[in-house]
Length: 108
Image 1 (cartoon, one colour):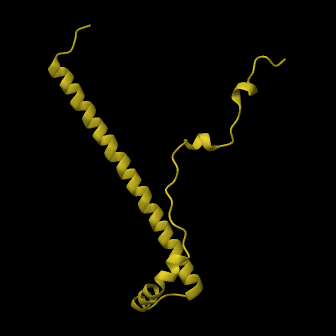
Image 2 (cartoon, helix red, strand yellow):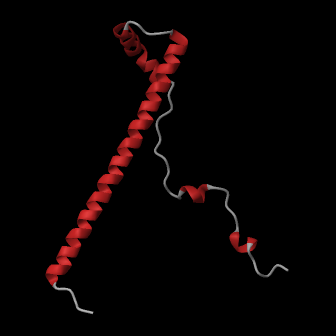
Image 3 (spheres, helix red, strand yellow):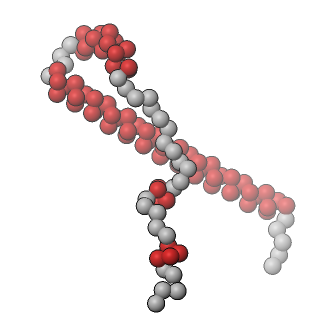
């Protein structure tokens, strides 16, 4: 097995760095996409609730002024947004099972 020259090692590292940058960009793009989808869903839900109780809004400027006027009261009714905990992976958050005792060979 031939050893790689320093130039070949550097080239390998450059390739790995390019791959990692691409992976990072893909992950960031996916996160942004998920955030956009969640925001769009939330906005649609809010709009649906507004139309449910107020009917179709025909004067958007007047409605915006109304919301601006009462935004403080609306904010006070909302829970602060909390960051999701990422201490344990999703599969570990399920009911815990004692696999050691469940598959014990000592049981006859």
